[in-house]
Length: 230
Image (cartoon, rainbow, N blue to C red; front, top):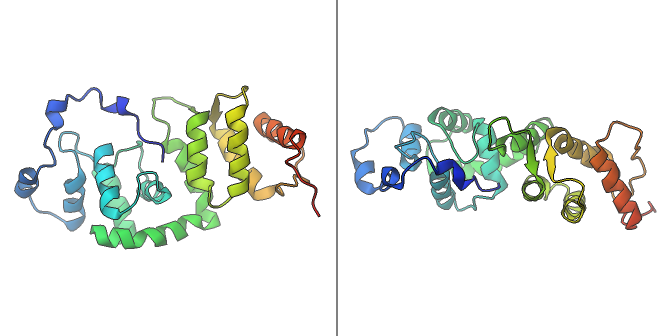
């Protein structure tokens, strides 16, 4: 997923967080439930939650990159509210739902989680969550095109590779749209699910498609990327 903004950590002085994950601190931590102990092993004690640094440490232990879609899926399972941060309640919710309480169990559960998310009845919800999760400012309603291209590749690149490749190409070369809102984001999933591609034979501009998709289809046709169905 797009990396959480560093600006979110600015109010915290570095002196307050130095060494919070040191071995001595972990050794003196009161033992509790395994899920909670695992949470505290990654949490920033000053914040009382897992922060971007803790998530990167978790990813390292899981053997995945922080941009791996399964980390975003894990955030979905937790119903995490803030990009780059997991609260203890969110952590408990997600790991209990997955019935895991160790890193090894969580690592083994990632493939099952991915299968769960890829089910049609879950994917639309996950897709919407991915957009909301990347809104990093209060009252923010949009995401800039550069981040959208990255997010599309992470969330849909393996499922709709041709659509994502051409749409992100279009977004990068056009000059009319600087940001994408939720309606445009969710409409692209509907576009991928319903429109024959790359033929575009059943795309109707009189239907309720966002203008950006009309422009994308027009660009494809002008560039002769919309091929005739054989």
